[in-house]
Length: 82
Image 1 (spheres, rainbow, N blue to C red):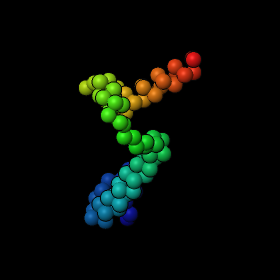
Image 2: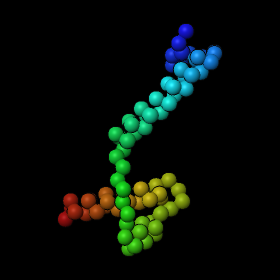
Image 3: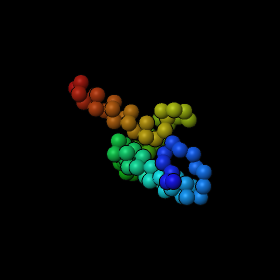
Image 4: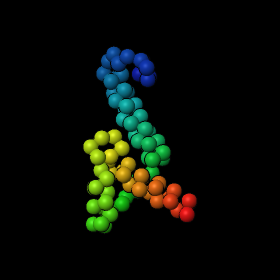
């Protein structure tokens, strides 16, 4: 019997099938994440980095990505209302 998702792993063949499935599933989930959340490599200059670091906080929403998103959104809103 070949293992299928949702079934118990009962022997060595099942374990191998499960491990292959798990590996492929993780790869598929990573592809889906990358499709939803495009990565942007950004290397700020010293002035921009100082600004980002001033706004960082040790709680949710205070990480570098959130700070950069907030800066961009505020800048865009300011330009729309100008």
